Image (cartoon, rainbow, N blue to C red; front, side, top):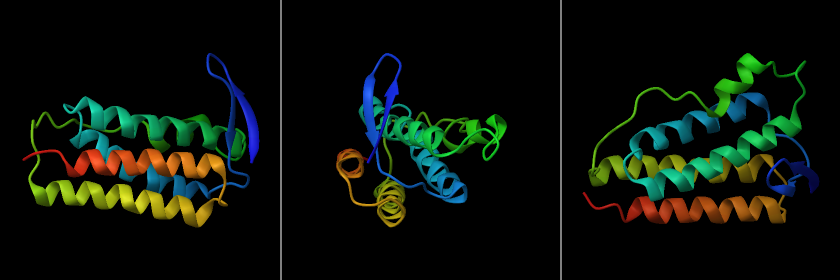
Length: 137
């Protein structure tokens, strides 16, 4: 594990190693698609947004400016376009977003060593998946 300090939050930990930038891009796209769909369901949105925020922070610790310029960095996990104002999602659409979150979980497990920070983030993903599955249509 690698330690770091966040202003306003304090000491934090992240897995050692780093995920390739291209993979962060893929994970960011998956999370942004879920966030766009879950915009009006604040519990789901906030869970996924917290995951995105944590991965964004890990990326900042993994790469310096020369490796990942700000213009590219800011697009990895933020700046999704559009929002869905749907109050419900069909079971098929929910299944797509659950699949996206499951894929994020799998990708993170492939690219980071098993560690308490990764397990904590995986638990957050499990909570988001469970919440998305119970979203009534």
